[in-house]
Length: 301
Image (cartoon, rainbow, N blue to C red; front, top):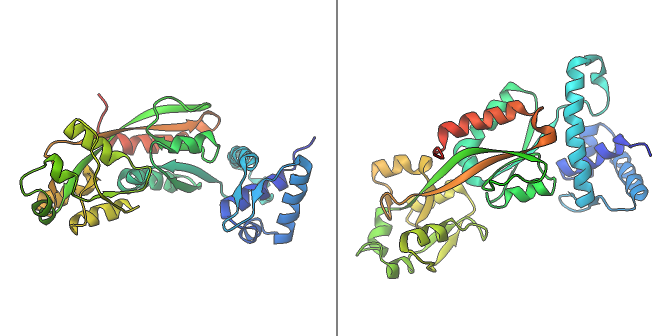
């Protein structure tokens, strides 16, 4: 059974752009043509590939096709470099790479690495954000080709390389500390002082508290899903937060922030995992990631 690459490309483009209309514009065809290609492929496979909605998303089988098309796109890109006469073929445009990282890495060092890679190549990137304990799931499900993750064990079919450790300091404004910790960092005071938490997956504050107090403690929290807002919320006296060292350094030096427990840092070891089938073609991406990470992150001796 021949592979209908025009239909596969339509599936991948709808998933990437989120709609049939944007996919049609990207492929320079009509939305009806995109719809018909996908409908015929779904009928042929006897399976739904696209969950229609806003945005459109892929089913598990659709994701498998998207993963295949990611690799096809890279192969086509290599082919066009050797045979530029084929560059007018449908789908021979820029290739979008799907990668995942945690928000704190994106807010401190990852953007520099990705920017360096995009300036040296003509790839486009689609960066997904999730907790570092969960980005490996994006690899397992085939939603991305590479990810920054806290998982040291290789995801099936991936290569893994240590990056270093992202270091955090528990910081708050002087006014906040004076209000909630007038007698120092006691267990009782800690359990009444509001924290800043990224989302329900974020366990860093709980881990830090366990390291400081030797046990799990409950504490009130504000929910604030933004690395930069963590820092700004700390400065505004909204709550205490675990801020990456790189972001909190200047404010600590100026005295606009203070540490709750001086010297008590939390380290999160990070790893770069990349699909083995794409690793060689994306050598420049890995090189850029490792170069910046090993300069900006704490070494893992």
